Length: 374
Image (cartoon, rainbow, N blue to C red; front, side):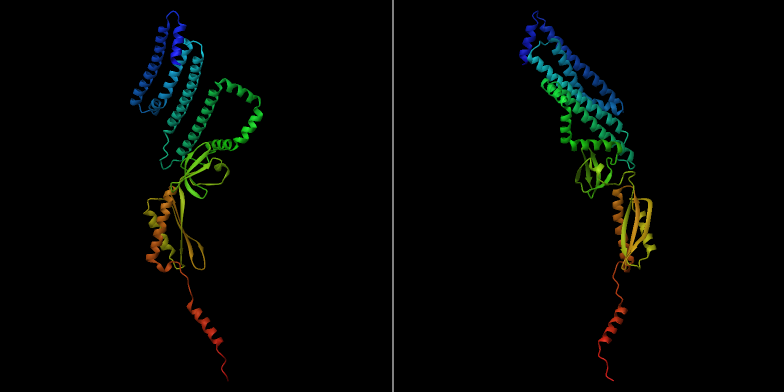
């Protein structure tokens, strides 16, 4: 194909100007490469002397797609200016059109990701008070996926419209857009519902990245929020995949919706003889020695009682749910150990009133004896 194209160019230039055509073409390509290389070398040197994230990311993210775009434009100019009209040139021009669409799409996607990185560099999700960071990161990650999805769909549509046959099919589809819309609506009902749910999550934010949730009786963190599904990282490292519509239509628990701090409870069941004040003092001592306690809530109350035991609830606070879990476990162990060592008689037990049972047994025995004869 290339040899035939070169021969056509030579034959077209009867005056021997084909040599100048080749030279001009090489100069166009070399000039394009030189402009690209010089521009990015300048950016690279500036980024080494600057702390700005923009300059550091431009070099890495935009270098390859911009190079492909410039070369495609340069080749298109060369073919348009110097190549004769034949089938091979038409095919080459069409391939270059597709490559230009591809590189423009790639470039736009990289620009979107670059913008997200620049905005999110100010937010650290690893901070203790990371509510604002999680809110912003969630919004931008969903918006990024939506924009990339739209860009790819538009690019595919533009690429397909470069084919004459598909363009004719598109015109006929527009003529019957009502029927086609109904068919596509039924076929993609769930997909469209999930995409719209992704929009709702981005705006209303019932969940955010790293929110602690309970879904399907599982406790975990929101790890990914995509347009059509959400990934929940379960505490034992499993991953629960749910459609985005689940978080719009189904009830679930979000433990970090407003803040990450949480109250923890520990229930202890004891005998009625337990000294409540001593147990309350022990709870305070245990909490003060535990780094997971945030120092805000320290309560011990008798919340229920039965004919055999008392239910005692210890209430404590912590900065986040993992810390609250460790705190509850430690408090439960220490309170049980305290009762075992100091007040073993206050542990739950069953009572039997021996005296009452003896009186009942004696009366039954008397009634069973025959009456003495007078």
